[in-house]
Each structure stands twice: as structure tokens, then as C-alpha cells.
Image (cartoon, rainbow, N blue to C red; front, side):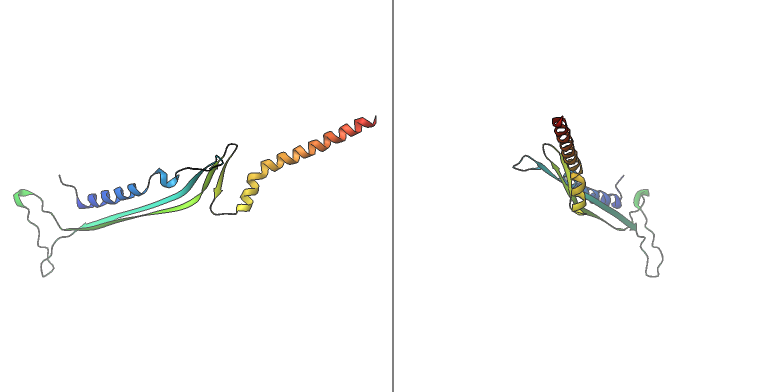
Length: 147
């Protein structure tokens, strides 16, 4: 049994979309910097696809169906018209930066200052707690020296 023309249209469109989109479209090729960090681009990929068609029955000059008589008992092939289309959108999201001691996502859009502060918050807390512990130990030692 022969394939219907709409099946061929759909297969062609889907094959084209598959060729455009692969894992390297979403997660890009890593790039190593001279400092040893690795930068990996990350993107958002969206795609859409549509196909449609119709078979037409020929009409005579008065708008009546001519009918299609098949030969040897076969069903006749009716004229077919159709189309398909698809689209792909690739939008960069950010860069994944992998260094020896941390992994960070640097977004392309958004409030960079707020995100940077959130990224640095653990380091700031460590520095403040270390600073307060030093002052506390220093006061205890100076109080012990008086006696």
C-alpha cells in the first residue's frame, strides 16, 4: 500500500526539524579558559510544527462531481493538495561556569547585581563570622592578661 501524500509531507518536515535540533543546541560545546575554568552555553529551544492537506474530487463545468472510476477494481487516486511547516526558536539562557572550587550559572538576562549578591552570600557570612570570632578571641586573651 502506497503512503498517503500527507505522510510524506510530515516525514520531510520532521526530518528537517530533527536535523536542526540536537543536544548541542540546548547545551553548547564547552570552552576551556586559560585559567582552567570551563564555560558551557545553555539555551532554551522551542519548536512548532503543522501539516495539513485535502483530497479534491474533480467537478464538471456545472459543479457536479465527475466521479473517478478506478481501473481493475482499484480505488482511484484523487488529486491532493497540502503543505507543512515548522519553526525553531533558540534563545540563550546563560552560561554555566565550572571552576575548580565552584559552579555558577551566569544568566544572560535578569538582575545581575541581585544574583551576584546571592552567589556571594555564603562567602560574606563566612568572612563576617570569622571576623567576629577573631575579635571575641582577642578580647578574651586581653582580659586574661590583666589578671
